[in-house]
Image (tube, rainbow, N blue to C red; front, top):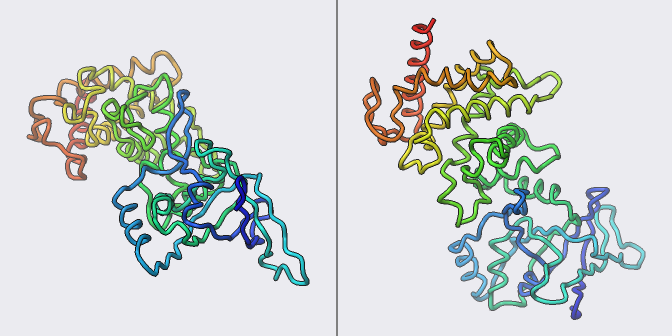
Length: 380
């Protein structure tokens, strides 16, 4: 290693025509010189940055204890996204390649100072990398697979694929999915549209949920303000995208097209009316309001299918009448709701006894829909 360059013998794997892939080794103490952790966060404009979850201190401690021991065998390698500034020189000789891989020397430029950004980003192995940076066995050779791409979309896609077997936190996956533009495994692909919609509701200025949804990128200083868990809203939207839901007609399964604009409009109009129907229960901790709790979000999501089906039969969702019509429909159930105090009629639960479990969600959903339908029959 020179002052501003690490040179390592490497294999270039002939895998992707446009993205070079290299296998090589670094000393444990060099990992911190070469690679940064791309923490998930958002900038002031709301743009998503990075993709890595927070450090797991206990996990890092356990790895470090092993690395600091004697006779360490550590085959668990790292996956790095390398910059385009790396250089590979194939070895000379009669057979530098066997058709699968080419042997040569890989040059990785280093930053000019410890404070400057590192040239590479860690796609897989961030907890291991943190332990490697602290181990006393700084000369321990570590296996590395590095692909050359500075495109965050490519890095996020690889990050999600690598972590399919050992599941990532659902909030992290949900926040990353809207940023991945390539084809995803079926399981992840089905979750992308709800994730896009939740992300829009969290960020858009006309959304009643703006600033209220707790996501993986939510900073510690803002966690008290984010009172709605993204997973509750994701599940509510996913249910409404099913064949029995009000959002389903806007997915054309034959062509694969989705009217995201109309779906988003339905969600904004409905939940804005929910906010304005129950202003005292909106935007506060779920410990103080079951409307902001998972049981409230999921149950009101099921009521949305009934309310919006009727509203959209009568008026255009983009008209000025749509909001007023939803407010009138929600007024039919408003007197029977006990989001912040009291006891729910008929179902005999105190307001704070309802939890985000299937039984309570079904009980409350059934009650709200039943009250709504009875009130509609009376109004007719």
